[in-house]
Image (cartoon, rainbow, N blue to C red):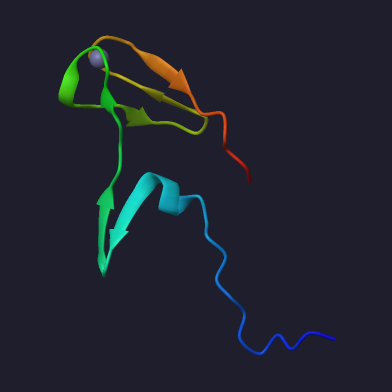
Length: 64
Ligand SMILES: [Zn+2]
């Protein structure tokens, strides 16, 4: 039987949305490919969308 004294923290999907640099957590939102850098896509449950031009990209790797 494996000893589960030290349970390794499983990487959650949060690490996909945020860039964890030391103890700093910065949002890793993608910028809109149409509007360019500076315009970030709004995060939704299963998609990201640009509030400026309406560009929407569906997240394909969302697992719960
Ligand atoms: Zn846009």
